[in-house]
Length: 192
Image (cartoon, helix red, strand yellow):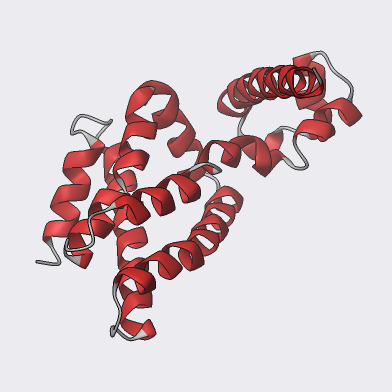
């Protein structure tokens, strides 16, 4: 019974968090990220500032929370790739969950990415997330590539994450006309 109650709380917490994020993103898009305060966000959501802060520690967390699952998704996807597959192919395929994530709700994701690109503080925080993903991907790639130097593995992971960044930027500038997966394929093709 305790696990069911705990799970119900988690579901409710996630639903509230999602609702607060939607309200906040709408306000950021209407008013501009830098002009909106935490008090504005709480008022727009109809909650107290302390309640809002229970779900999001900062304004940046509201926007960048959408990126939270991506590190684990990429790491798990890389770990699941066949052992005999080339490193380049494995890294490219490890980005498939990201393409699925952004393609699932393209208009919403496009607005989110545009907000990030237009806000230097968000760009910097997203870069921090990339830095956080790097060690996890590196650990898996190193396991898959015995005999390959750590430096080479680090460069390959960095190149894959930078390719993802460039593909996302292109996807936004092209109004997501070309599927993100195709842009990733094209970007990785530059390494061949």
